[in-house]
Image (cartoon, rainbow over all chains, first blue to last red):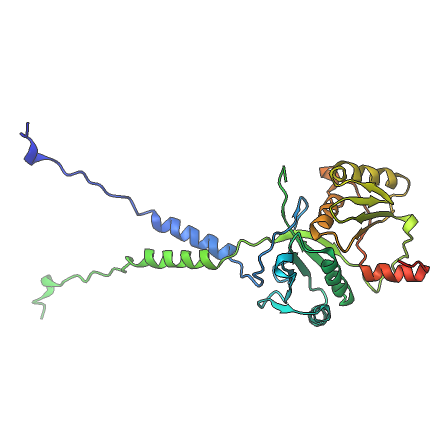
Length: 146
Length: 158
């Protein structure tokens, strides 16, 4: 029964890790290329659309929080973190300043789908008054069945 | 002089790579935590240039789409329920544009409607021709203030 007990061969249980460095570097390259700094951290449920065009990376952002969070407007030049504004006049001042520095600057409106249109209308009006040329309405991809 | 010639010891030159994996994983974790897979797409629209002479649009010379609270629309004054917009809106516009392809579409939204209601209609209007959409020369989104100005000019109280 235990004749070959002493001669039992040890199994070489080893995980091959040589390619791990390649995978890790591949992941790093992916993250470096897709890295995006977030200038506005307002959590919103964007409206869904079929038609979606790429928005410029350095566009100025105007975000409006959901109704249950008070529909707070925040503004960012696209390079610094967004700041809340309390009146629509402040949006006009902000947009006018940005447009004065760069007349071709694009603006993004990032708003929750449940925001009352009255708020969007006032922001659009502020941007029109500030002579903004192109506006992007941020959305998420609509899928079949939604 | 050359006594130790045969005894010369070779110095092993090797770069220590044992900690490289640790550094790599640290970098991965950093990028994963700080990177944002944010939405970077949306519907674009250009605002009319102030320098360019914009022709005055009369309501009867245009297609009036008025988004109501709840998602229904008033299409040239006729109610179209939200569940029919998907199929009926572009059909109606295509028929109307047959006579005058340059007719603009005015997209108005009730202040009490939601942003989602408006975007739903705007998205349909912007459907590309290759995906079953129609070519609409101009889609205008006037603001409440602009509409008020027009009503005041026409002497209509709202």
